Length: 182
Ligand code: IMP
Ligand code: MG
Image 1 (cartoon, rainbow, N blue to C red):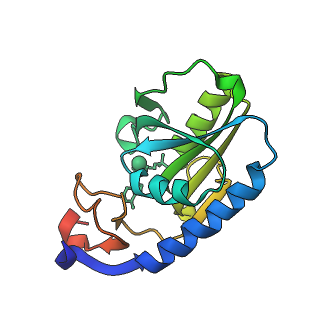
Image 2: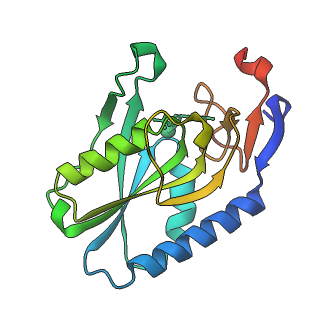
């Protein structure tokens, strides 16, 4: 796998710093809330990021899962998000949700999910992403918590995939263009 990586974008040490910093912010921001704190892991990309964060948040919390995909550019960009797996819960009004994402690109996935959870009656909804590519934005969207802004390169590792591969790398790297024919 390493031979397909151009360079390291976020090292294992830096991921550790990022998750410590965000976990501390979240702990401070929610310590006085009387609602249930629920981290929503967006499968599959934010699996590792969610694990690291939840270990470091010093508050009672629940973890839940959603799986979504965006239709992206291929379907004339309606911005439609497909929900493949949803949360089975009835207590939206009792929950402070934080949606955990691997990366924000166009911004469609997270802006749609924030709206969707709000419409279902969530007490509050915030978003948290490990990586952000602000130069790629197609809709107005700023994540509440962000690990690191990166340039417009294709990133893999620490949960992020290309064709389901590379998720298990313990760092985030830039994939060589020849691998995806870019
Ligand atoms: P958005 O709705 O365009 O913001 O899409 C974000 C989703 O696109 C992420 O959850 C990823 O699944 C995928 N994505 C965007 N950029 C990358 C990348 O550099 N590497 C891997 N997946 C990416
Ligand atoms: Mg994803």
